[in-house]
View 1 (cartoon, rainbow, N blue to C red):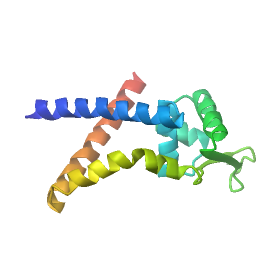
View 2: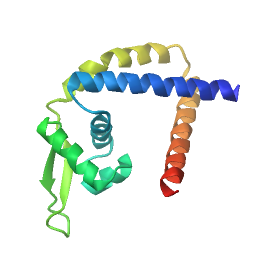
View 3: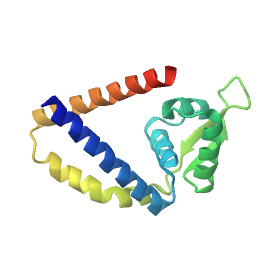
View 4: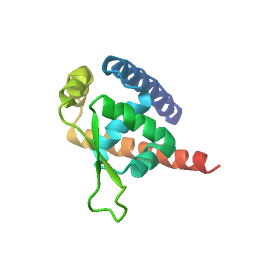
Length: 148
């Protein structure tokens, strides 16, 4: 049964990658750009260094991503008045383009709502816990690979 779960997770990974690529094409964002925007939306505001660490990207790569996101009006960069270093910058997601994201992902969100309706709250709690632990395992494996 464990192999069936792992195989299903591989299938899920492929399908989400395809969805993200299609989504990114529609809103003109590269995969890494979309991932960084999602991280900013979930964890922001952030410094570029903190975002690079969360995304597992080199700071020089992050500069290009942030330039593209700012040109596309997805983010703003502003000096951080609280920082000891006056050059410090904070990155924030803008809200004016958020409706585009919601509209593009509405099909998947609707399907997920319909799918979740088929489970009890207890079953959903079990699934959510499994997915959180799976994400943690992925983070740990990523850290291991990065340190080799």
